[in-house]
Length: 150
Image 1 (cartoon, rainbow, N blue to C red):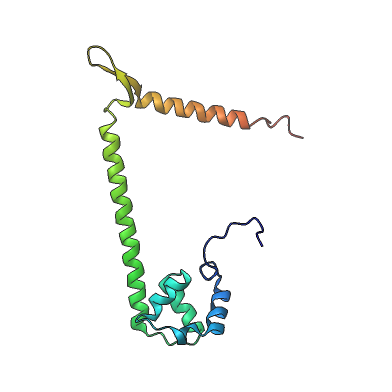
Image 2 (cartoon, rainbow, N blue to C red):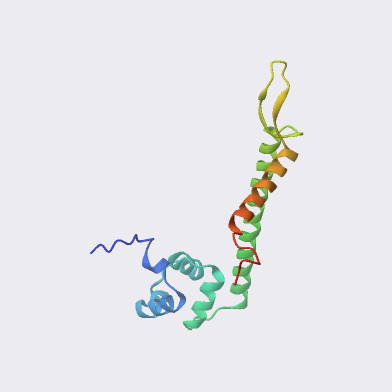
């Protein structure tokens, strides 16, 4: 029966911790798992990170060694560093793009004259325009002044 809601993936990937733990107990998923790496399999199955998987497995009675915990922490840190490097690379590309399409004195070059001289909006003009727009918006939303409030 369709109730108008859009399903956002399998239920096991939308479960909260208590539901996941109960589901694993009821289905005996830990005993049935046939893969090489139980922690990685749990992470993929329930869409959680390694530390969450380790915590839940300990709640279920699975013995987690310190070595496994350290390995999971290192993996999470490596992913975090990789994500940070990717973000920095994207920001560098964006800066390069902005430098290519922006002449030093201009924020935006609208075109060129017949003699090849650029014309457009300078950085200073853009900053003043933005600050004026912000002030107008603040004035627009500040309808009441202190004297008119009861």
